[in-house]
Image (cartoon, one colour):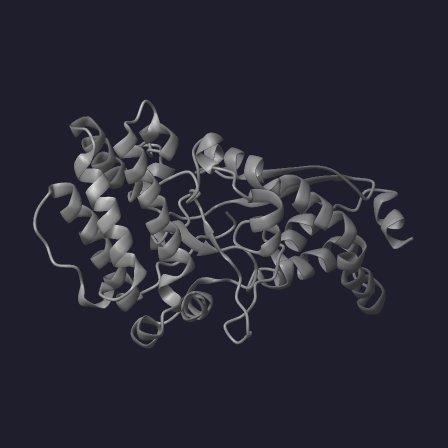
Length: 325
């Protein structure tokens, strides 16, 4: 990732999710409990009842495995860091009893409903807000102009009528309990979400970035340019080499950044060329001045890519001349 997201304060949404999770833990603990009042009269209560009944008829080992899956799958940061192994539906259903298969079918229904339908209910919209409201807050407090994953796609703003999709970092089709889990939900651009990631599971590729990390993000592109041609790109980092490998596998980051730089290189050089002619200064001085202008708001207008590209240029005989043609 080119930058990490801030954890967005959304107390009402978090409280709603905690209430839902408390229903799961009560069912796993086999205790008598009352559903939150807002669940009465909506389909979710019936789905939970069917799930609970099938769960109670399942084998003891199956019950314990499902409770264990819940405790593990909500630990998104530890899953990213490879200190916890998430449990998939496939893992749970291996050699499963008929009743446990019904239990898992019911769980999938609940998980789909939570994300697809719950925050569209009128009463909850008035109290908690919609995912669009959450996106607006997310954009204003956390998004830096472009997609954190590719650094290329411009994100819809908090003022736009529509919003970017929230990606399920660890796919809800593969893992239970992650459908409406805020640390597993964050916006990415349409190209990253639909064209590159799709239903890929990042854990299949290795250690992954935790999108809400508080660590210092030192990832930056480094180009090798010869005679005006970008020959290679690497992503430099002292802290995240394993994560970078997975990031590139899932999102094809290096190729996309290289391609973007190639088609913009001559345009980025125009200011340098103009400064050389207008102010009668040498190439390095003009280039360094342009690099300095890229240091503020570095994600805006793809300045971080422009900066890395310009830094890779030097006044080698023939190179500067070629760029002017």
